[in-house]
Image (cartoon, rainbow over all chains, first blue to last red; front, side, top):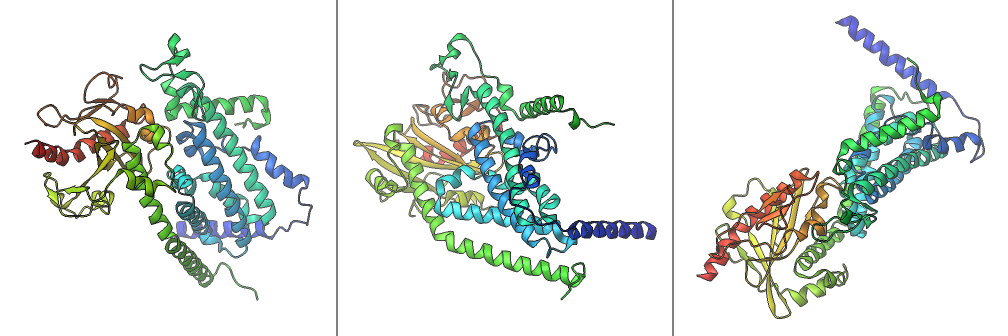
Amino acid sequence: MFVTIYRLFQIIEKLRVMSEDVKKTKEPSEPLFSKKNKKLVTDPLTDNNPITIQVLGICSALAITVQVEQGVVMSAAVLFVLIFGNVIISLLRNLIPSRIRIIVQLVVVASLVIIVDQLLAAFLPDVSEKLSVFVGLIITNCIIMGRFEAFAMANKPWPSFMDALGNSFGYAWILILVSIIRELFGSGSLYGFPIFGSALPGEEWGIYTMGYMNNNMMILPPMALIIVGIIIWIQRSRNKALIEEH
Amino acid sequence: MAVNRDSNGYTFGFAIALVVVVGVLLAGIAMWTKPFQEKNEEVKKKMDILKAILVKDDYSKITRKNAGDEFENYVNLEEAIVLDMNGVVKDTAAFDIDIKKQFRDKNLEEKDKDYPMFIANIDGKKAYVIPVVGKGLWGPVWGNICLDEDMRSIKGATFDHKTETPGLGAEIKQDFFIKGWIDEKISDENGDFAKFEVVKDKSGSTKESKVDGITGGTITSKGVEEMVNRCLLPYIAYFKSLKN
């Protein structure tokens, strides 16, 4: 038993040394929109997409992509929280004790979200009503914690800002694409506007009068997983470098 | 000065400082925004009641700004009544009752719960607004049921929720779901309660006391069914006593 504990301590010590090393590497000063910084924004859009490559934030991608409007609202909310959170964590990165860094990150993201929620409820009540359920989803979004831990803890505020921008847009376009497919074939509308007509009993119009029916499977969460799977498939068949070798 | 960031002292110090800063910040913001939030909630409550009594065209003119005045035009709060669980009138102010809070309160006994009803006048006709509250899949659901002059047929309704799944359970607030409730009767000719049922087979629009549920939102739909069936009971008793 003592041996196990000793091993555990060894591992923790190793991790600590590793994290120290990461923080010690100093970057040379570089222009704001250097190639490296631009890559921080463009990479997560395609070859390092948080959803399709890192498979983070899947929970929210499955839950709220039934309608385009919700996809857009969620993307905007994540954009906001990720940018502020990444910059704050990056500013604090040299002060945060490594043993409690995850807790600190969690506190930062949770308080950010609550502050925004309170302010919206007081001054923009209509927006606040729309956001209601998303508040909890943002706090638990793995992309946010993932970027804090993997990037903001080891980088300066500006690159962290760019990284946040890239990752939230990478998240947003997948979310919106999935919700377009699901809303169009599941409800026959886009952003609430009827595209295929109306399927309300007694008031059918559009192609529903010809016997077309909405695909109810599209409304259920498993279909989101299948659509995300298809996107991953297309992406990997276009870029063979993404396929892992085992 | 070099500080050992891995020492226990520093870790504890940082944690305490963080908690204090965040705690003060959050508490300060909560206290500062509370009066604004309460005002918004009151306006929202009035808007929900107006939404239940008005037809869509009239309701579209209601904004957060004019909701207070419009509410007074239609609803006379002095006429509003409060019932107990057996449908007997109580002497309490109806608008201040927070039925959501009462529903949440586990220590509150059933007999002490209040059942408010607002009475509206639309073009000389009376309409009765009954607020309802229940639980959905993830959190509370609530709404208002508006009855026509005959105290039986549903004239309008609103449903709302706190945390139902967007696109699924959250659809209870949409018109297509509310439409299913309109023109249903809450009681038969003798004034006895006609229990509602949320169905899956799309028979809701043709059969009495049946309402179409939402695909993928079954638990929330059933929550609404339970809420309406439970909350309407005291009012049925009250209407029956009026009749006799």
